[in-house]
Image (cartoon, rainbow, N blue to C red; front, side, top):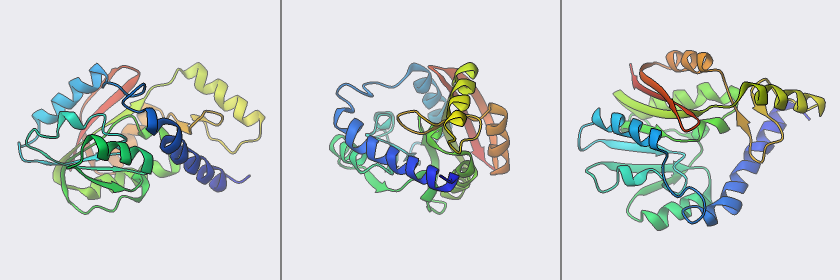
Length: 220
């Protein structure tokens, strides 16, 4: 199988599984509460914003982090590629405008003062990272803020997953987990910083916690 086809199939598989496997239980047995390090960085993020800011919650899922913004003086727009997750978000936050669109297809034009993308970038393949970052750059107003997380994986596990996938002749690159339930890619933090800067962002702060690296940045 060629790589383009393989990546397309893995993405469709992820969308289906989020909609049919996890969405029904999200907020019941899954995704019950935000991680503490995420909340700390969300507060840092909020400290940068004007009270009436318009915020994009990209890859919002069922709205796990929306309580930090909804009803607190902000205008929130949520987006996700999973119809099932958006249905749960609509149940939880009926007054929030939601759009079914993947990170790779976002086409917002300078609509937002700030954006968050929580626990989702690990599902983006290396070919699409720059696409997604450009989409965020275009969606934000000049000087807008972006906060996203990057999942951290043990290097030995990443290496083992790569060797296993290679042994099965899967068209993977280093950092991808070819046999996980849902596609994952773990770029180096150096690579993430390079992509971020190339996309026109300045990194304001970084940190780690709860298995994630946190990036808080501003559009140049």
